[in-house]
Length: 219
Image 1 (spheres, rainbow, N blue to C red):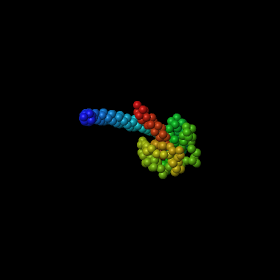
Image 2: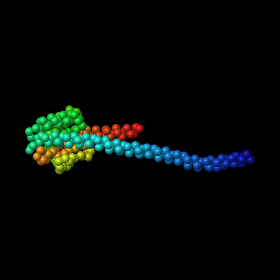
Image 3: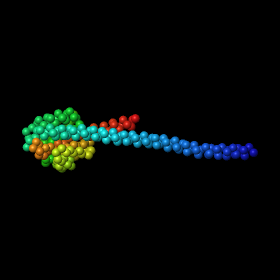
Image 4: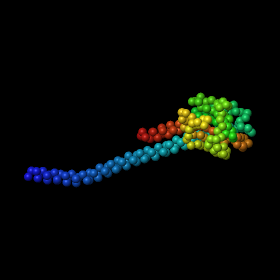
């Protein structure tokens, strides 16, 4: 008799437990769903902010770099007459050296003639800019960026995709992420006389993007 009563109590307990378990399971599932949605929305909001901050960082830096490019092209126009800097190359090189040192973000600043031959090249040299000797100047006529820039009209600018620096046909080591900005040069008579090319050290941009998005992730 005691065993029968015990079985009845167990069955009654199980029925009651199951009756409570169903709504409790539904409640726990609903709470989990709400928390999951909350976490997902927070992550989505952070990623959206990251995209916005990234776009803003890229835009700000590119606007500044384009401003540098246009400023130099306008200054160089004052030096050009019939031939490409024929009588003023040392003075121009000195100005570009000073510009490179002040800015500190251009791995190379180059002037090329219309055949693709470097006329003046300023190397940043880890913050100690110097003018490349004439014997080290290269012809860049086969590079995609030269072909793009030389076809532009006055006032137009070229911005390359992010890529790596290449010297003498070989990717430079250690790797240097690079964005190239260029524009055609015109003399005072309105004749195309060459191109200006700025090799921007894109690690600066990558660092800024990382810092901008990192600030959001840490919130």
